[in-house]
Length: 282
Length: 282
Image 1 (tube, rainbow over the protein chains, first blue to last red):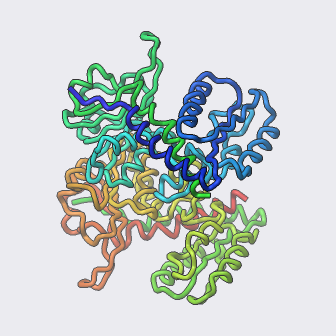
Image 2 (image 1 turned 90 degrees about the vertical axis):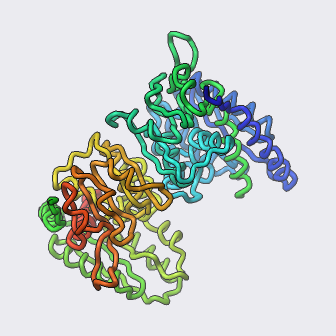
Image 3 (image 1 turned 45 degrees about the vertical axis):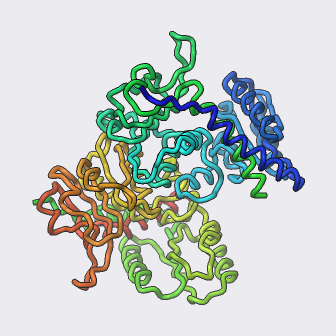
């Protein structure tokens, strides 16, 4: 029977610190402000936006909702994005992606100052994660996985970590962040041969492949910490579920994060942390 | 007894292709041009510069030597760098680093267009290596290691690779490049516990720790390909030597690159390849 590590206490601990930081900033006349840029009305975006706004309210971060119609002209959208990016009262930007197909995402990201890039999507933020320097911010989900490890007191230095998945949103950045904290990291992916033989030797397993319940007991070991970053729709059960087959894996590992109520619950707190850092850096 | 894989045939093969590319470019009125920016007279820089100029001559790349005194004022140097960077006749820049202490290296690198950054030192190039997109160029040495694998027909996809060392010049970028070619990569470093137990399971071992003869037989296995990227000064022998204890390891692995005459011999060819690519991209 594993310890089940929920995200809510982690989120609460981060938020608690942020509340104080925001008070201090406001005393200095700075109101930390996040612009949420959304094009269209995708249900996922709307759900995350609601969550982010709720969290923002809790910690005292101001949110400016920049909502544009799905069919906005590219040129018009770019002008708006430049306006938002250069607005001195906006400390951070969260831009939902992918953008509609008629808008060039590469160009749009290039218009964002990495210093305002709260979710690690710019070239500067990517280089920052790769080089471990303070350019931009890492993707919130990748950092949320790290916050889980920190909060629950996992020693990272000198440990073996395995990451399943190599996306730019979670797999690759979290592998880098683990290495920057001196873990020895192996990054598995779709072309990896015999994944269980590799991941079962790790002290820390980050499941971020985006494949429903694909991580089975043979991927793990009894001393392993399993961080499940997957958010998949389980058609049969009509609910979201993780990359880890929780019912099968939970009995055989040391600790595991559930889905839902795990890493996903920490993401908006990390987003707010980035906004506060950006406001402080002003 | 291992196959001993030298760098010279790899360099020759790259150069041969480049000669044709350069002819085609010149027929179109484009003379591929590399600016070598050197501050001071460091012996290592001078040695590499000579090698690069020799290679450039062989393939038909024009070199502009931009040499500045060690005590050049920062402001003056920056103006020169901007001039070089904006010169339309300069396709690529190799800037020797580290720069003298009174010159801010971060600022200097930020002045270079990643499209002219022939040795992967800019933020854009780093992000390019991390994200596997065509922003800038990877560091020449990291790519030289990959060129060795390609030339000697090593299958990378689905193989296990271990990289020792996590520098931004070789360890981290080569780990990324191996993963982009679908190897499963583990990146070992100074805080890794029991390196031999990890590296000995790899099909491909990249030794890039910069520690003289630190890779011993127990780090390897009989089917392993060993690419030695180390260039260390052996005080006792009065010569350069690799990270791998060649005499001990060579008898027990499948293939190995020597030092000198291994990966190091390929670096200037990769540099010229980047210049030609930059000239083509014009």
